[in-house]
Image (cartoon, each protein chain N blue to C red):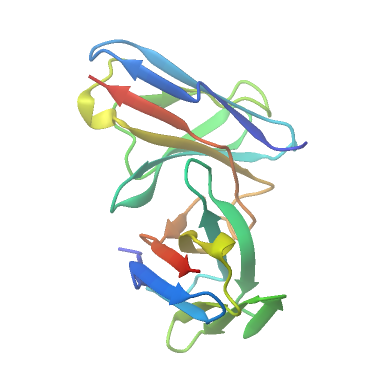
Length: 112
Length: 113
């Protein structure tokens, strides 16, 4: 069945360093790839997304890259700050369907 | 502030009791969803609705029911709660089905004893 694998499950970085989280999807028809940040006790919030007609997208310290051939997409956070500490989820979806397939999450800890 | 309101925030419930989790959105989104979040399992879809008057089953629908009488409200009912339904429940919405931004509520933490 359709699935999204997300790695690593936990990631610790020093403040100011970069963090990279990777996801692999199985359904080649997927064309929308969002990333969500979930802080403790809160609902997931969209931080960046990318569509299949684009290879890379940036928003300040956050970037997402997509490799359709390999069915990989990655979240890159530069100059990490303590407030970046949270659980991050990737997902894959396609138009006309109710399905958003989520990864199992990465717990990012930014050490001051 | 536009968004999704869920209630209750937290609830402890005896097994066998009936419980309804409420969800209201003010963004006029057509599609709404209910997910449960369990440690190590990520977000799993329970039920969804494409538009008012229509609903569908997700990945883990057993023991749950939903209704969509209007655009804004999408309640989730547990007819007879069991301990395995202990979880955090998130309501979400999107403008249309698939390939669109999902907006989540803050969640309802349910404990079934």
